[in-house]
Length: 112
Image (cartoon, rainbow, N blue to C red; front, side, top):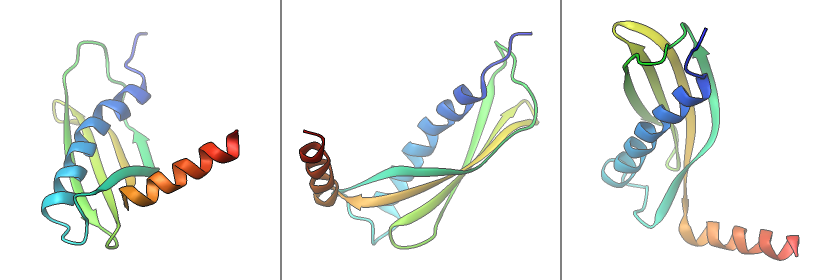
């Protein structure tokens, strides 16, 4: 029986969730700087309630709530018609670009 793999549902939702986080980070969370980058730190919860069949259209509902001045939880529900197919919570942090560049440079030096 062909079904859409769960990882594809999470990935398709992540596009919408990332766009929301970036938009909210710049416009709503005053402590989040435009020179910072928001990125996933982990998937907190992920539940699949029903299979999604090839050709079915999914709708994705997203909510975002700030936990600290640098972290947020993004919750999403994937629906097929009115049936909930999946739900997910991802933990997102915002880090200054300069800090990330220092960490990346250190990782590159240590791997050589």
